[in-house]
Length: 235
Image (cartoon, rainbow, N blue to C red; front, top):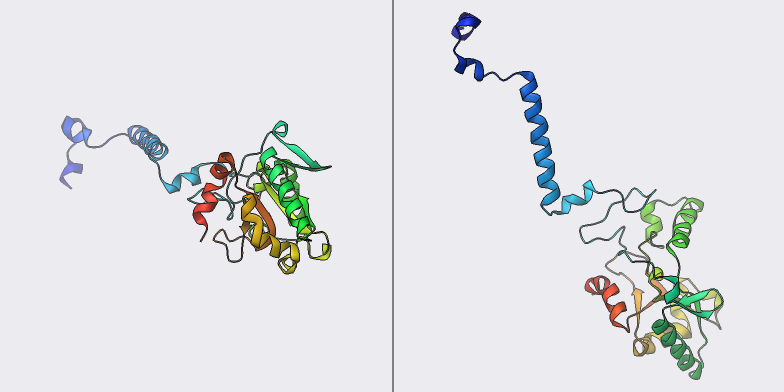
Protein backbone atom coordinates (compact mmCIF):
# COMPACT_ATOMS: atom_id res chain seq x y z
CA UNK A 1 0.00 0.00 0.00
CA UNK A 2 1.18 3.52 -0.79
CA UNK A 3 1.39 4.68 2.82
CA UNK A 4 3.56 1.71 3.76
CA UNK A 5 5.80 2.13 0.69
CA UNK A 6 6.96 5.60 1.76
CA UNK A 7 10.05 5.37 3.99
CA UNK A 8 9.55 6.58 7.56
CA UNK A 9 12.03 9.44 7.11
CA UNK A 10 10.06 10.81 4.16
CA UNK A 11 6.59 10.64 5.66
CA UNK A 12 5.09 14.06 6.33
CA UNK A 13 4.62 15.32 9.93
CA UNK A 14 0.88 15.33 9.26
CA UNK A 15 0.99 11.63 8.44
CA UNK A 16 2.87 10.90 11.66
CA UNK A 17 0.43 12.96 13.73
CA UNK A 18 -2.41 10.81 12.59
CA UNK A 19 -0.80 7.86 14.40
CA UNK A 20 -0.70 8.66 18.17
CA UNK A 21 1.67 6.66 20.34
CA UNK A 22 0.36 3.92 22.62
CA UNK A 23 1.21 6.09 25.62
CA UNK A 24 -0.82 9.01 24.27
CA UNK A 25 -3.77 6.73 23.58
CA UNK A 26 -3.58 5.28 27.11
CA UNK A 27 -3.48 8.73 28.70
CA UNK A 28 -6.45 9.77 26.61
CA UNK A 29 -8.39 6.71 27.71
CA UNK A 30 -7.66 7.38 31.39
CA UNK A 31 -8.67 11.03 31.09
CA UNK A 32 -11.85 10.00 29.31
CA UNK A 33 -12.75 7.55 32.09
CA UNK A 34 -12.07 10.19 34.74
CA UNK A 35 -14.26 12.68 32.91
CA UNK A 36 -17.07 10.17 32.46
CA UNK A 37 -16.93 9.22 36.16
CA UNK A 38 -17.07 12.88 37.17
CA UNK A 39 -20.13 13.40 35.00
CA UNK A 40 -21.82 10.34 36.53
CA UNK A 41 -21.14 11.59 40.04
CA UNK A 42 -22.33 15.14 39.35
CA UNK A 43 -25.46 14.38 37.33
CA UNK A 44 -28.32 12.93 39.41
CA UNK A 45 -29.91 9.70 38.30
CA UNK A 46 -31.36 6.45 39.68
CA UNK A 47 -28.24 4.53 38.58
CA UNK A 48 -26.14 6.45 41.11
CA UNK A 49 -27.16 4.08 43.92
CA UNK A 50 -25.04 1.39 42.23
CA UNK A 51 -21.93 3.53 42.81
CA UNK A 52 -22.66 3.88 46.53
CA UNK A 53 -21.70 1.39 49.26
CA UNK A 54 -24.31 -1.12 50.42
CA UNK A 55 -26.61 0.57 52.99
CA UNK A 56 -26.46 -2.29 55.51
CA UNK A 57 -23.25 -4.18 56.17
CA UNK A 58 -23.63 -7.89 55.53
CA UNK A 59 -26.80 -7.46 53.49
CA UNK A 60 -26.35 -7.71 49.73
CA UNK A 61 -29.22 -5.40 48.86
CA UNK A 62 -29.36 -1.85 47.54
CA UNK A 63 -31.81 0.99 47.93
CA UNK A 64 -34.68 1.25 45.49
CA UNK A 65 -35.21 4.43 43.49
CA UNK A 66 -37.41 5.87 46.28
CA UNK A 67 -34.87 5.12 49.02
CA UNK A 68 -36.40 1.93 50.44
CA UNK A 69 -34.46 -1.22 51.27
CA UNK A 70 -36.34 -4.46 50.60
CA UNK A 71 -39.57 -2.50 50.95
CA UNK A 72 -38.68 -0.64 54.15
CA UNK A 73 -38.16 3.11 54.50
CA UNK A 74 -35.04 4.38 56.32
CA UNK A 75 -35.53 5.68 59.86
CA UNK A 76 -33.08 7.33 62.27
CA UNK A 77 -32.48 6.10 65.79
CA UNK A 78 -33.87 8.52 68.36
CA UNK A 79 -31.51 9.58 71.12
CA UNK A 80 -32.15 7.68 74.34
CA UNK A 81 -32.41 10.94 76.30
CA UNK A 82 -35.53 11.77 74.26
CA UNK A 83 -37.39 8.69 75.47
CA UNK A 84 -39.58 8.06 78.49
CA UNK A 85 -40.36 4.73 80.11
CA UNK A 86 -43.77 3.15 79.73
CA UNK A 87 -42.80 0.19 81.89
CA UNK A 88 -39.52 -1.65 82.49
CA UNK A 89 -37.90 -2.29 79.11
CA UNK A 90 -40.46 -0.30 77.12
CA UNK A 91 -39.66 3.26 76.00
CA UNK A 92 -41.23 5.77 73.60
CA UNK A 93 -41.05 9.44 72.68
CA UNK A 94 -43.04 11.39 75.33
CA UNK A 95 -45.91 12.36 73.02
CA UNK A 96 -46.31 8.77 71.80
CA UNK A 97 -46.11 7.43 75.36
CA UNK A 98 -48.84 9.84 76.51
CA UNK A 99 -51.05 8.78 73.60
CA UNK A 100 -50.52 5.08 74.32
CA UNK A 101 -51.43 5.61 77.97
CA UNK A 102 -54.59 7.49 77.05
CA UNK A 103 -55.50 4.78 74.53
CA UNK A 104 -55.00 2.00 77.08
CA UNK A 105 -57.21 3.77 79.61
CA UNK A 106 -59.94 4.28 77.03
CA UNK A 107 -59.73 0.64 75.97
CA UNK A 108 -59.89 -0.49 79.58
CA UNK A 109 -63.05 1.57 80.10
CA UNK A 110 -64.56 -0.43 77.23
CA UNK A 111 -63.51 -3.74 78.77
CA UNK A 112 -60.45 -4.28 76.52
CA UNK A 113 -57.01 -5.11 77.91
CA UNK A 114 -54.65 -3.41 75.44
CA UNK A 115 -51.01 -4.25 76.19
CA UNK A 116 -47.75 -2.93 74.75
CA UNK A 117 -45.48 -5.79 73.70
CA UNK A 118 -42.64 -3.82 72.12
CA UNK A 119 -41.77 -0.15 71.71
CA UNK A 120 -38.43 1.55 70.97
CA UNK A 121 -35.73 -0.74 69.56
CA UNK A 122 -32.18 0.40 68.92
CA UNK A 123 -30.55 -0.20 65.55
CA UNK A 124 -28.14 -2.60 67.27
CA UNK A 125 -31.05 -4.66 68.62
CA UNK A 126 -32.79 -4.56 65.24
CA UNK A 127 -29.59 -5.86 63.64
CA UNK A 128 -29.66 -8.89 65.93
CA UNK A 129 -33.36 -9.47 65.34
CA UNK A 130 -32.88 -9.32 61.58
CA UNK A 131 -29.66 -11.30 61.06
CA UNK A 132 -29.76 -13.78 63.93
CA UNK A 133 -33.33 -14.88 63.28
CA UNK A 134 -32.63 -14.89 59.54
CA UNK A 135 -29.85 -17.41 60.15
CA UNK A 136 -31.89 -19.50 62.60
CA UNK A 137 -34.76 -19.78 60.13
CA UNK A 138 -32.54 -20.21 57.07
CA UNK A 139 -34.29 -17.28 55.39
CA UNK A 140 -33.16 -15.23 52.43
CA UNK A 141 -32.84 -11.47 52.90
CA UNK A 142 -36.06 -10.96 50.94
CA UNK A 143 -37.93 -13.49 53.08
CA UNK A 144 -36.66 -11.99 56.32
CA UNK A 145 -37.48 -8.43 55.23
CA UNK A 146 -41.12 -9.36 54.74
CA UNK A 147 -41.47 -9.92 58.49
CA UNK A 148 -38.68 -7.79 59.98
CA UNK A 149 -37.05 -4.54 58.92
CA UNK A 150 -33.29 -4.39 58.31
CA UNK A 151 -31.34 -2.34 60.87
CA UNK A 152 -31.74 1.37 60.18
CA UNK A 153 -35.06 0.76 58.46
CA UNK A 154 -37.38 -0.01 61.38
CA UNK A 155 -40.14 2.28 62.61
CA UNK A 156 -39.36 1.09 66.13
CA UNK A 157 -36.05 3.00 66.09
CA UNK A 158 -37.94 6.31 65.92
CA UNK A 159 -39.60 5.88 69.33
CA UNK A 160 -43.02 6.26 67.68
CA UNK A 161 -43.95 2.63 66.91
CA UNK A 162 -45.47 -0.04 69.14
CA UNK A 163 -46.47 -3.66 68.92
CA UNK A 164 -49.81 -4.10 70.68
CA UNK A 165 -51.52 -7.19 72.04
CA UNK A 166 -54.62 -8.40 73.83
CA UNK A 167 -54.02 -9.14 77.50
CA UNK A 168 -57.01 -11.49 77.54
CA UNK A 169 -55.87 -13.48 74.49
CA UNK A 170 -52.06 -13.66 74.66
CA UNK A 171 -51.88 -16.65 72.35
CA UNK A 172 -52.88 -14.37 69.48
CA UNK A 173 -50.19 -11.78 70.16
CA UNK A 174 -47.64 -11.03 67.41
CA UNK A 175 -49.54 -13.19 64.93
CA UNK A 176 -52.13 -12.63 62.24
CA UNK A 177 -54.65 -14.15 64.67
CA UNK A 178 -54.47 -10.86 66.59
CA UNK A 179 -56.91 -9.37 64.07
CA UNK A 180 -59.62 -11.62 65.52
CA UNK A 181 -59.21 -10.28 69.06
CA UNK A 182 -61.28 -7.68 70.92
CA UNK A 183 -58.17 -5.51 71.19
CA UNK A 184 -57.71 -5.33 67.42
CA UNK A 185 -61.37 -4.61 66.79
CA UNK A 186 -61.16 -1.82 69.36
CA UNK A 187 -58.05 -0.40 67.66
CA UNK A 188 -59.74 -0.41 64.28
CA UNK A 189 -62.59 1.64 65.71
CA UNK A 190 -60.61 3.95 67.98
CA UNK A 191 -56.84 4.12 67.26
CA UNK A 192 -57.15 7.11 64.92
CA UNK A 193 -58.57 9.21 67.79
CA UNK A 194 -55.20 8.78 69.49
CA UNK A 195 -53.21 9.39 66.28
CA UNK A 196 -52.18 5.77 65.75
CA UNK A 197 -52.03 4.23 62.28
CA UNK A 198 -51.68 0.55 61.30
CA UNK A 199 -48.28 0.43 59.59
CA UNK A 200 -48.59 -2.74 57.52
CA UNK A 201 -52.18 -3.56 56.57
CA UNK A 202 -53.06 -6.41 54.26
CA UNK A 203 -51.61 -6.09 50.72
CA UNK A 204 -49.67 -2.97 51.69
CA UNK A 205 -47.65 -1.36 48.85
CA UNK A 206 -44.37 -1.76 50.74
CA UNK A 207 -44.62 -5.53 50.28
CA UNK A 208 -44.27 -6.18 54.02
CA UNK A 209 -46.27 -9.01 55.56
CA UNK A 210 -49.56 -8.12 57.22
CA UNK A 211 -48.90 -7.09 60.84
CA UNK A 212 -52.15 -6.26 62.66
CA UNK A 213 -50.19 -5.69 65.88
CA UNK A 214 -47.78 -2.99 64.58
CA UNK A 215 -48.99 0.59 64.95
CA UNK A 216 -47.20 3.94 64.58
CA UNK A 217 -47.94 7.30 66.20
CA UNK A 218 -48.57 10.21 63.83
CA UNK A 219 -49.76 12.83 66.29
CA UNK A 220 -46.86 15.32 66.10
CA UNK A 221 -45.15 17.33 63.39
CA UNK A 222 -41.96 15.33 63.86
CA UNK A 223 -43.77 12.01 63.53
CA UNK A 224 -45.69 13.15 60.45
CA UNK A 225 -42.45 14.22 58.80
CA UNK A 226 -40.77 10.89 59.53
CA UNK A 227 -43.65 8.82 58.21
CA UNK A 228 -44.62 11.04 55.27
CA UNK A 229 -42.84 8.79 52.71
CA UNK A 230 -44.80 5.79 54.00
CA UNK A 231 -48.03 7.80 53.88
CA UNK A 232 -47.39 8.63 50.23
CA UNK A 233 -47.43 4.91 49.44
CA UNK A 234 -50.63 4.28 51.38
CA UNK A 235 -53.61 3.33 49.15
